Length: 333
Ligand code: AHG
Ligand code: MN
Ligand code: MN
Image 1 (cartoon, helix red, strand yellow):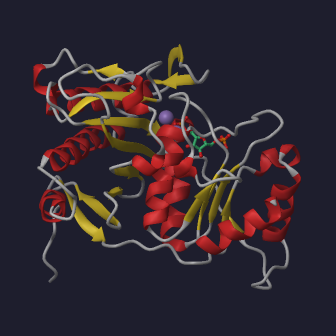
Image 2 (image 1 turned 60 degrees about the vertical axis):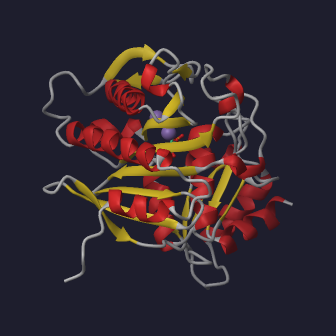
């Protein structure tokens, strides 16, 4: 019987590979894991918890209806990251601007900032489909001990120190990277521990799955339409690819990360920068995807090289198996 490797042990074991690691990042990753276990616990019985489903009755800065669970997950993350003391501030899809933890004594000497999408795919939540949480960790660039500023958050993805997601699917998994490969941990809810289940994840070089909301097909640019036509008819495998799209980036991304394929959210007439957010959806997923041997582009440049100008900026995204992304780039040229 294989020995169980729990997340805490794995993080400590691997912190040796992180330059000048002093344990702070390890503690921060553990705080994220604890927050995700709290979200998981209430998510799993959301249908039974009084007044936790449905709309929160507010519209966020994205102009989207906020679900109660969006807010619930957001508050849990802020609470655990603030009490953990390892980050000096956060930015969230559900917060108009960044939130400094300068008022919390335990965060005074924190070296990191965290950006997150507390609940991704929340349109799925009321019908019990897969949702997730996505996080991105940077080292602050302003002096330790001062209140964080926007500069600490508006860093290109190529500066990421760590990134990952939690997928609340048929099982709950945490998948993350610190730049030394990608590892997946499955939550054993009796133990209450994330246990190593998918060591050193590598995405197949070519995949036969494409994930896109075909509802926007007629609004897409010509090259994207030609690539989608290629996926749907005879192609080099002499049979059409499978379309798999569940409307939750974490769910679609996780399947393709393991099986191979490509996830596309392109720009369109209505959404001229696409829909997905660079800082807490596309950058963390791009870091993971490249660490697993795949590619991530906005159609013109590597996602991780985009120099951000605003916290909630959107970007078109083509992410997945190296061969599939290279193919779509050919059509986009
Ligand atoms: P969020 O729930 O955090 O707003 O993210 C939803 C995103 C992403 O998860 C998914 O891939 C995409 O929205 C689906 O968009 P469409 O419904 O337009 O296809
Ligand atoms: Mn999202
Ligand atoms: Mn969200």
